[in-house]
Length: 136
Image (cartoon, rainbow, N blue to C red; front, side, top):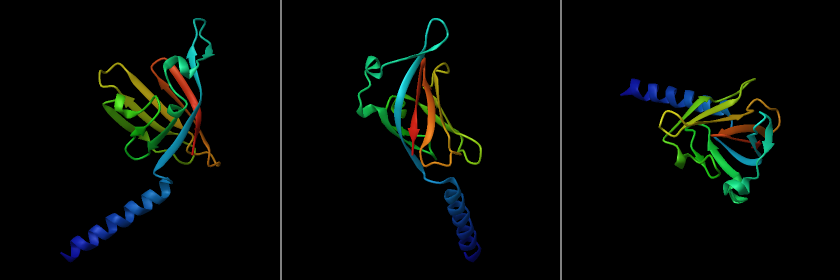
């Protein structure tokens, strides 16, 4: 029993250190712009209203551990699987893969975790649309 308690204490301590290193456990993000690739291969602005996205839906939160997204057009209610590919850090992006489950439709979210500012730029795709904005 004593060895179990020591082991549990060490595991909890390691988990706490890992969580402290990773920073906040979630991002709060706002979509600033949406884009679509036009017929000539160039990005063109895409009004979010055209997709039925309201102003409220331009805000979303991302759980950095599970990859669950609440709110916005990338909400995980639309996806059957989320996978955090990289939690980000020194010189690397936070990377999240979202899968609808049919093996053909994927979305990706990248957040500049390494940015010195509390505001971190992000970009994401949702099928043919590209989004960019800021997370905090």
